[in-house]
Image (cartoon, rainbow, N blue to C red):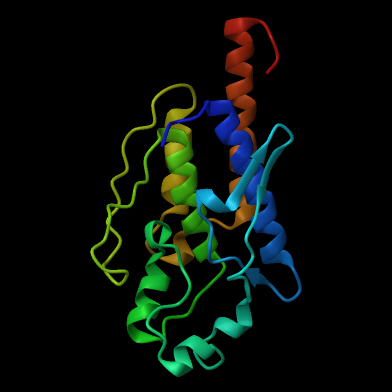
Length: 190
């Protein structure tokens, strides 16, 4: 995959995070569980999160309610290269709780790929292998700030990950700073 323009990547991320935030704030809260590049539709108007085939009500994913866990299914729904630590653990023990922050981890993987051109998850041999991240420097304007945000999205523990609404606020600040720096260089608003 190719790295895309930084401004476009940030704007795609804002669109996707807004969709994730809407899912998470729904009553009852919904979790997507299948966030990957193939499920993001991009047009001139922006980006849309798609393929809601694995979406579940969060309460239905609790170990006592989850049909997959109760029936001993091999692994809960998750894309191979966009796995999350809790979905991997859930595939092993069927008891690990799933939270909305699982979507944040998946999108953090996608966002890093948008910014750098490669997936930070080293390919696993099995879906239950621990996630091994290869996070490298993000060069260019606002690169350090973007890397800090991505690392917060890819925290191992769900409780250390930011909610979608906070990711949006931080990314909006990065977007403003990036546009300001582009204006200083080109004299044009982007």
